[in-house]
Amino acid sequence: MTKEIVAVALSGGVDSSAAALLLKEAAYEVLGIHMRLWDSPDFDDQAHRAETICRILEIPYHQVELQKEFESYVVDYFCREYRQGRTPNPCVACNQHIKFGLLLDKALSLGADYLATGHYARVEHSRDGYRLLKAADTLRDQSYFLYTLTQEKLGHVLFPLGEYSRDEVKQMTKQAGLPTATRSSQDICFISQKNYGAFLSQRFSALPGDIVDTQGKKLGQHRGIAFYTIGQRHGVGLAPTSRGKPLYVIMIEPEHNRIVLGSEEELYSQKLTARKLDWISGKAPQEPVTAKARIRYKSKEAEAILSPPRHCEPEQSEGEAIFDVHFTQPQKAVTPGQAIVFYNVDEVLGGGIIDSHGTGA
Image (cartoon, rainbow, N blue to C red; front, top):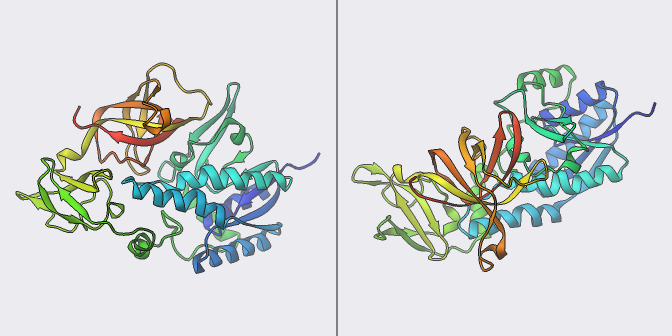
């Protein structure tokens, strides 16, 4: 019987190397595939570790050059969103267009039946199709970043770590003598935390504008809307309190080049609109749906009612379908540009991009 072939996306870190190890032990024919996404010493180190992992596991090594595509689909998108006063989620864009787009296509072209990654998530096949589920290790669950996966792609994707805890993963790679990253991975792989401001400064022309309160009273001047995000308190550039209460960025108005500050209470919203929604089943709901929703990766799930899609005016987002979401309880710092993902217990229903948020109830 011919073995099924799996291409494992190797970053050089613990998780992807454990995925390759588990698949080899499960008697798949395994090959390693590493994406070259960015020119930097960190990415040089990643490539070296990925090649070393393949040598230890005695599997073929392939390297795919995707710098131009990563720049276009992820970095340019990242910058474009910030220019529009939004806070992007580059990991979602990378998964959709790079890992489970171009890299999956490359894996299949190499003769692989599947692409496997080190994501902590699970795929289950039922009579109704494929279901995307949370990982067994809820603290490491990464299903939030995977809501753009389609039925077709789920049929060619494996997540070997879905049933394991991070401690178990680290232990198995240690016992196998596999190299591990010298430091924890970053939220944004192409920007180190210490160089975040410098990266933004290189990519954006600073266009100062007004900082105002909710009544429109000028409080100071900002250095460019790209340097701010909803919920930000520190680094605003003026005294962060009003009458003894902390002030937060509660709104960014790119059309006026203006930042609005308010109290913590004014950060809460009970409703939002979302766009560019993807559904794991491939079918958008036509009736209101009650589900648990997560408005950022680290936020707690909250009960929400998702209304059927409607279309905005043609001059607004080219007539794109948008969805209204109402929460049972107000949510803090609902941020345009971030992903909202809907769950039914452990199952990912789908998700989209937060477009705007309402105030109050």
